[in-house]
Amino acid sequence: MKDEVFLDSGIFIAFLVRSDRLHEETVTLFAHPPKRWCTSVLVISEVYSWFLHRLGEETARTLRPLLESLTDLEILAPDASHLAAVWRKLDALRGHKLTYVDASSLVWLQRRKIKTVWGTDHHLGIEGASVVPGSALF
Image (tube, rainbow, N blue to C red; front, side):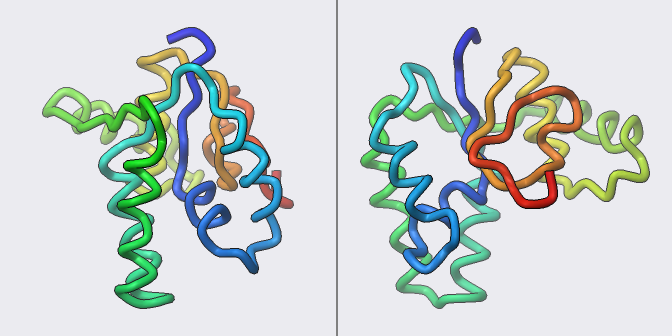
């Protein structure tokens, strides 16, 4: 989808954690949302788990109201063909130390022709996408 933006886990964490070094940048991004944006069930699961295990259940529960406030955010759910494509992606990119969620996100980026990721994981740029605001490693 042309001009669509994919939201990765780091963007949600930076937005919800005020002490995060990228918090102000993410606040600015969310203040000017794209016309089309999406994330995946797997990314949401990853973010919820990150909050739950690092900051506790109450902080993890702040994710739901944020997601509900993001007008027209499409949440992508994998089907059997997507899951098979993830394994192929992991095989094709062996040595990059991708998580399963990262490989899944790369499959979504490829299938939907998404060129921009809001996130902090440099791995999501290995096939040409721009990662905004990005990380110090990229």
